[in-house]
Length: 89
Image (tube, rainbow, N blue to C red; front, top):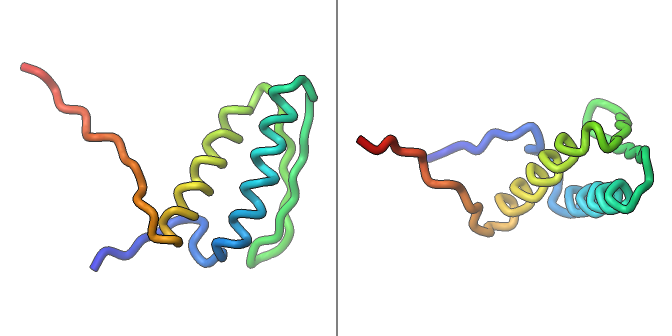
């Protein structure tokens, strides 16, 4: 049996959904012209906070995609993965 390992393992789907909503709002705020947005969250080993700017919006996008993927895995939804890149000879 395949054991899924993710940095987000152990966090409930409800907690991830709440975090996802906050991260998506930050993304929308950044895209609408606000320069800096912060987010704080609690993890098993304590509280964390992060500040996003337009300079690191790609990090935010990757974090959003990671949370969405983990929610899909927890709820049994299919995770869309790209096909492997195959060289053409």
